[in-house]
Each structure stands twice: as C-alpha cells, then as structure tokens.
Image 1 (cartoon, rainbow, N blue to C red):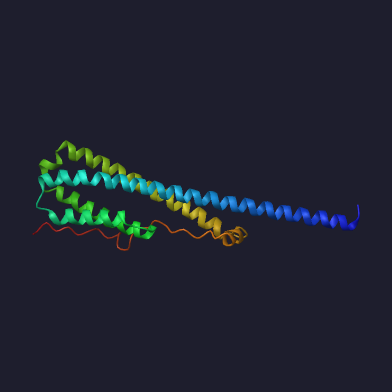
Image 2 (cartoon, rainbow, N blue to C red; image 1 turned 60 degrees about the vertical axis):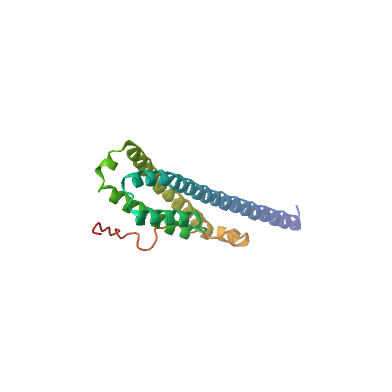
Length: 189
C-alpha cells in the first residue's frame, strides 16, 4: 500500500469514529431529554389527580364548615394558579400555594370532629395523602432525570453536540421560596 492510501484510510477511519461518536452523543442527549419530559409528565399527572380530588374534599368540608370561606377561596385561587402555570418554577410555586392552602384546610378540620369521622372525608383524605406521596416521588424522579440530563449536556465532549443542536438546560422542580416555613394558622377570629 502506498503512503497516500494509508493516510486517506486513516482520515476516513477518524471521520467515521468522530461521526459515530457524534451520533451516539446526540442520541444519548435525546434519550435523557425524553426521560426528563416523561418525568415532568408524571408530575403533571399527579398534580392533576390531586386537583381533581380537591373539589370533592372541599365540598365535603363545606357541608360541615361552610363559614370557613377564606380557605375555600384560597384553594380555588391556588388551583387556578396551578392550572395556568406554564413553566416548571411557576408550577412549583403554584403547587406550594395549593399545598399550603390544603394544609390550612386540614387544620380547620380539627375543629369539626363529626367531619373527621365522615367516611367520605376519610376516603378523600387517604386518596389525597397517597397522591401527595406520588407527587413527592414524581418530583424526585424528575429532578434526578434533570440532573442526569444537565450533567450529560455539560460534559465534554458531549457539550459540543448539545450546543450544536440546541439542547438547553432544564430547570429543577424546587420548592418555592419560603416553603420551608410552617404556615401560621390562627383560629381566633
């Protein structure tokens, strides 16, 4: 073989390796991005499930505690905010507002022992608690998928492919500012 032919074959092999690496990197980013989207969809599904349970819970509580109008308004507003959330941070903030309103509702229930013994209320409370757990797990899964995707996207040399094809960093589903504070509930009207 001539020296020129060896060079050409060597260059072709290098091009094939680089091209193969590029395809593998691109496909890896696409797979990771799809995992993030799937995890986000799972959060949306669980938030919708909770949102669907809330009107039944509110109706049950209203039957016993109709004078607690402010909390019912807060829940309705928080549900509307969650339904209108467009970004992950907006959704996280709306979720925190709804969780806060639900916590206050459940604290109000303590003043109505006959409500706590109502089977419908108990069933709804159990379903809501299960849904809250599902939301927490879905958030963890989403944040794990985001971590994996963002890490893969930033690593060299995959970051070259990521930047070339417009793979953007994803945001975490984080608790809103102040979510670590326990809400103050005052029953002295």
